[in-house]
Length: 137
Image (cartoon, rainbow, N blue to C red; front, side, top):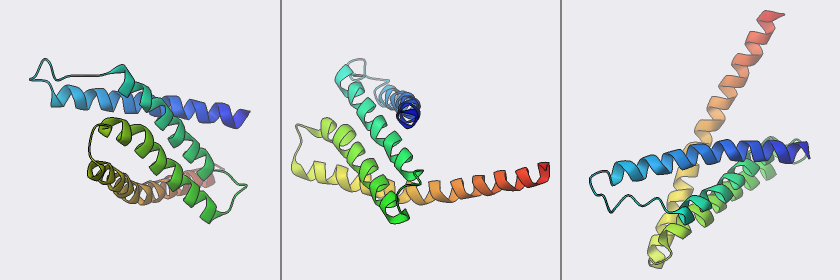
C-alpha cells in the first residue's frame, strides 16, 4: 500500500509538471492567435494516465524484486506505451497512420536520448550523496 501511495505522489508531481509544460507550449505557440490557444479539458485529462504510467515506471525501476533486464524492459515499455497511448494518439486521432508512426518513433527517440542521461545523472547524484555521507561520519 505504501508503494501505491508513493507512486501516486510521484504521478501528481509529474502531472503538475507536464500540465504546466503543455499549457506553456500552447500559450507560446498561439500567443498571437486568440482563437488558437485551445487548452481542451479532454487533452488535459490524458496527461493524468500518462503521469501514472511514468510514475509506475519509476517505481518498477527502483524495485528490488526484479532483475536488472526486467526493470529496464518494463520501464521502457511503460514510458513509451504511456506517452504513445495517452499523449500522442489522442493528439492525432483524425490524422493518418504515418503521423501516428512518426509519433511512436518520436517517443522511442526521446526515450533513447533521455534514459541514458537520467541514468548517468542519477549515478552521479548517488555517488555524491555517498561521498558526503562518508565525510559526515
